[in-house]
Length: 223
Picture 1 (cartoon, rainbow, N blue to C red):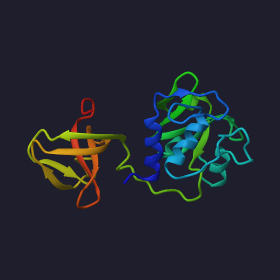
Picture 2: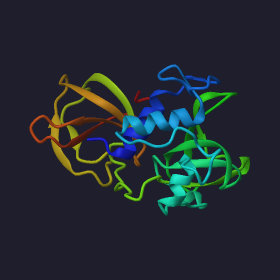
Picture 3: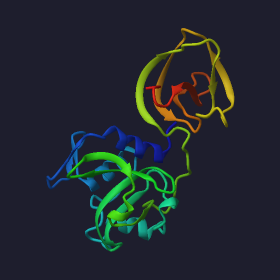
Picture 4: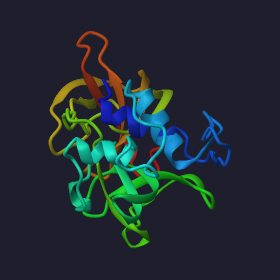
């Protein structure tokens, strides 16, 4: 099953393309979002509640203040993980924008909502006033990147005999757990980019109840 971090990122990815909102409430869920409304809704989708404003009232219960008080504040981009909040401004106590980390790395990717682009994914713009970020709760969820992906509900038809099913989305580290034959149909619930150049389809095994992955093809044309 998707982890807490996965649920946050998957919610944000499902809203890419939505318009930026200027209304006082922060937006209309599913249609428009300002930056803090997007992060609030994404955490809500994962069963978590955070403040509705990102940092205009630091020290008075803002999203950035929660990260700092939880002891998880970092200014090192490589320490950020999917689902973490990232903030922009003059300094930690004077921020004006928030985004959500969608992919970890030396330069992470984030999803945020801005007036010029609406909800979109991009590399962390460090030069645009990045001041830090992290997880806003003292209890930090375990990493679980195996099920992180792009939500979908799609039935695919197996194109070749003996397609190997693995327990991880990788030909390098995934263990073979089953096989499908040509013409078999499988319903997947997410596309998952692998570390081997393949795009994988994720589903829950009917009898095992565990995560299962099938290779759909090379990443640039699998979808």
